[in-house]
Image (spheres, rainbow, N blue to C red):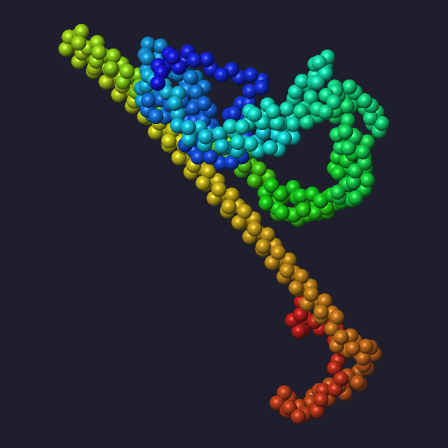
Length: 439
């Protein structure tokens, strides 16, 4: 254990260019929340322990002590439990350090192309000795440039001289010439994935933007439309897609939700600031009460009572004010949550109404198609055509009289075995109204 002054007097590790920032690494494997520093919210880096057994990173704790410790006091409130402490221990269980060092991280040079996954405890050795994408000085002492470790050759010669590409007539550094010749040269030919046409690599992007055979997604794909079709047919699909028509409404709702979330975030930050202020005021009142207890023996009883009364009034007023602010913020947050719920319900109802309207339109369309189908079937009736061919000559008046006499002498509906009615009269289009058929 050491005092706060001794702890602050220790020289902190200097961050150099070659030193890997362990807090900025990309963590691949999951880790327990108890291994996370309460100040920086990252796995412990050089952990230290306070008297209350709370553990922090050495650099984080030194910064907190420098910022929040009072110059008149030798004690420092713990950032987690606010317990006053005056000593810091450098001895932390080895198991805790090993668990932090075993967390899998990605190489900090992953943006350069390194795909290695290493335990965090070995990341510095990997970068210093084994990573092929780490920049090292050129073997030629007269050259002040750096090169990647993987580009070093056995003969240890400088590869920073320039050579001209035979295709694009561009000057390329020797260490990058192989990659340029195989992948980066703009004069290389490549094949379009949509139409299969061979084009130059430098014009590939322009060709893909205009190629009608390239498969593209619907403009409403961000709203849930799964359609992926050729670019030549995407315009037809977007005219029929209902999600494209509802897209502006979704955009307006998303904008409103984002603004509400931003407002809630600001309110939460204000709430945290007020809570920190309340904690600081309570700590100050506790310290002032302790100082008053130490010096209280030098004053009279009446002065003591009046000072206690004044401090109690100040404490109660400040606490009441902060509590009222806290409650008002809680009410605002609850109102925001209710507003978000109302917006979700309105969006759901709007989508449901739009779907119902589309279903009704489809039902009307189906009814119209069925009506047209029935009319076409009636017009294409073969019996109608046969009757039209048989009755091509119009009968004269005598024939009409004879037919009327035959119809008069025909038996009624009750005579089942009566004579036949003869050939059917040809059906005219004007007779359709008598049978109740709608054209």
